[in-house]
Amino acid sequence: MSFAGTELVIALPKGRMMAEAYETFARAGLELPRARGERDLWHRSGGLAVLELRGADVPTYVDLGIADLGVVGRDVLLEAGRDLYEPVDLGFGACRLSLIRRPGDETPIRRIASKYPRFTQSWLRSRGMVADVVKLHGSVELAALVGLADAVVDVVQTGNTLRAAGLIEVETLARSSARLVVNKSSLKLKRGVIRPLIDKLRNLVG
Ligand code: PRP
Image 1 (cartoon, helix red, strand yellow):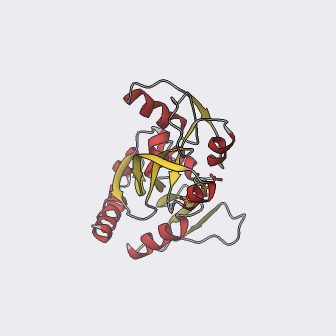
Image 2 (cartoon, rainbow, N blue to C red; image 1 turned 90 degrees about the horizontal axis):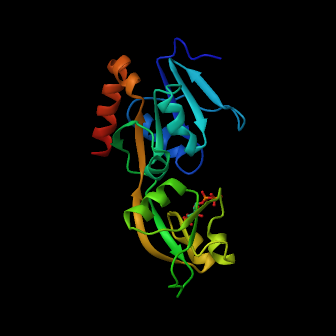
């Protein structure tokens, strides 16, 4: 399968941000092809192709040039450490990466569980702290509850998950929202299509 002849290939994250990503492109005048069913991994029409990916995979597809551009949360970009052009803060999908602990726990942090191990390590280094970082893939709050780790670094959006688990947000480490990311070669090669799109998206959110 190849996207040869396709004007633009766009990577979108499945989940919470997908609907708003489609809506944002539509408001910018780009009606993206829609999935025909749940197992429809990619769709193409009118010179546009959309890849529906796990959020964490969007930076990889864009950096390696399979997709020309994509939408992804800043939290994911902070973890991915990829060299992407990030021209527009799209505004939706606001959340924060926070340090989370059991209430009243002020013991030194020796082990942190997170879906964001690289980000967590670099935050620890910036504080001159040393702790083990354990990579988990989901339900991270449980790690703090059952003592797998004595702190957790995770996404807080509404705060409902934290409240339900009876955990405390000790500190906000980074703020996040959806970002437009662009492959640097695509920006040069497809300048005539991508630049006007960036301008329209900037006007929308500006
Ligand atoms: C994320 C995150 C928190 C929750 C925070 O998990 O890991 O658990 O959302 O959102 P809230 O503040 O609105 O409750 P996600 O729903 O992506 O599922 P996961 O735990 O399986 O990764």
